[in-house]
Length: 316
Ligand SMILES: N[C@@H](CCC(=O)N[C@@H](CS)C(=O)NCC(=O)O)C(=O)O
Image (cartoon, rainbow, N blue to C red; front, side, top):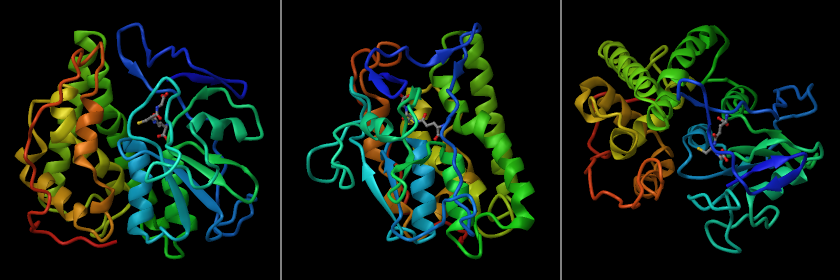
């Protein structure tokens, strides 16, 4: 795994950034063009124009894949799935099969970043949205890609309607740092203090979500919005990976009656379960890591019954 400097891949990895107090810092995404419904930005939501580079194990790619699935955009936006583990070449593709890149026959994701017309400097991350018409990356920021799919590709903007944006953004502002990235801040902390802070925030937010969901079907309104799909990838990884591999073990998702019911109701949305790959998460998060799992032994459990019917029924 490495970084790209001025359009050229360097395989020596500086590793995840950490601050003076040992806290984990995620690098900011830098390619951030915008697709709009009217195409005034130069990026129109044309069917077949865009291609997504993703990996099943990445929660940031997952939220985009979840959006694509529930909005029925599979035919509109094609996907290449990188092998669900990183290598010295970063994210890589097979020559054929499920993990090949049908668009450019790339063998590594850094080739896609290298093909972007403006020389790129930064980490070679998934997800990436590629524009086949202009031959460039549209965006490598999952939050932006989700919002573009939700707003530009769906005439009714059901996941993110104007009148709910404020409320959706308020949930996102809480769940991103404390939960989605919070589990990483716990798992990658390099000091007890940084871990303590992160893990406390993870569970404060889970407690808050559970309380909210005791009298609401979803986070905003009573149908599924972007705010729910941003929480979902973290919830489906929680018991199988974060609880143990990232030491987020005060409670399990299964211990939260409302949150666990809500998570299964989301899982049951048409198309969403196919984006969930618990075995891949397990092998990914428990892969050999000098910091977290030196011997790379993958635990057997837990058993999680995602298909157990939820009390609530959700729709988009
Ligand atoms: N801000 C990015 C973060 C994406 C991200 O961190 N992806 C990870 C995988 S989960 C990655 O590709 N990391 C590769 C690296 O840092 O070298 C987003 O949300 O789109």
